[in-house]
Length: 275
Length: 275
Image (tube, rainbow over all chains, first blue to last red; front, top):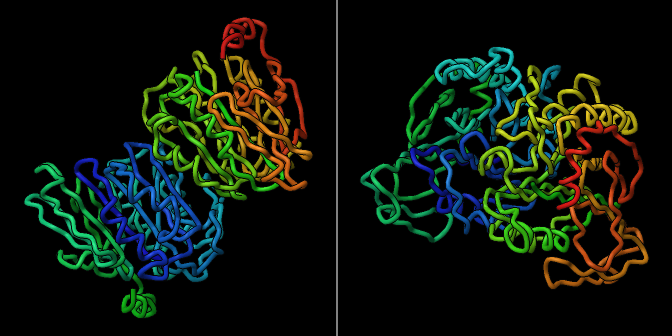
């Protein structure tokens, strides 16, 4: 399995603190060493860094820890290969264009016997179930709408498509188009919101404490979403299986429950027990 | 205007030497300081680094000079904005997926009154004539073929599409799908092939000499394509207006002449005089 990290912010914010703890799990404090990636949106476009080296050792990961790239929507992923070899083409996040915007997707899970047909605008480049599920999401959204609908409508369509894919197994994911960040929990996903009055945070995976009061303004608000809590002195909320959330301006703005078939839920339960 | 750098190799090769000279032109020895980008293919996938900071000052450019990423197809670009603001979404190279492979494109030129209609699978994210021309190339290739044809057939289709777009003005470009590198010269493009027996090379834009005999094997062969020569002691060949080349395994393998209308050639001539 893999781990996910997402950040949605009211103001452009850098991810260096959270990424430092997260990257340590990519071969340092944990075994997710089969590649990593991180995408930073700037309005409609995005910077995407991927590497099939481990996040704990990659010079690209080192740059991201040191270079404070500011963004309102960030998605990162560290990989422990389940389906697909340790190749660059199988590194998350994946990027595609839809309706004149870039879209970014990362997945933690395992979809069994998932072989959708791709006859439209999207085709996977690598061999992961994850990229296939992303291409299906893009294809379905394009079938639903010729132009981007309002975010509420988009969210409802996404809930439908998620229900379709979640039948195939564990499907925790993060998705963004630079305007909002969508998070679906199949087994393991935690969130917290950092906002005024800010306090300090201490990483679990590195001996690093930050005092957010010294680096923020009252206008800052940051929602963090992760496979497992990154800090040991903040209140992380665990999402329930089937929860689909939309984050905008650093907070949860939409919520839906996606029905996961009972047999799939039972099969997923073992994965929920261990991250 | 902008500058282009491409590399097509028989064996995975790093671009650190050529990129060091090229990046100096991005705000150091020359004025192309409105962003930069570089894409490194690994088989079907690719690492894409873009920044709206200048190549001479960006920490991402610094990483690329120091971290020897090996690739058989590299495309890089330094930007001097003509159309479109200095935004990340307007930084070259651009990436899209076609037939289950990533495609990378960078442009040096200026297309006048170029407003194609995008009703298919591709739509520009930014506001440059360059990204619009790339989307049109992808759209036309997809209209021609449902699956990737042999490279010879692809090259012929590309010559047709290039003739269509080159009517609108200066259209020097580099394009790759990770298998081959395509280069079209409208005004300014130079090439050379480094192969056994290798010698030394000295950069024009930095006081740096490399002795290729110490870092190569007889199997290495590298074709370099650039808007202006990067070294002062190697024999660069200037391409003629309308030349379209395909490079594979570090050498020119296909050649075609694209007809540029006389009026466009006359208008382009001033650009050819000054790089």
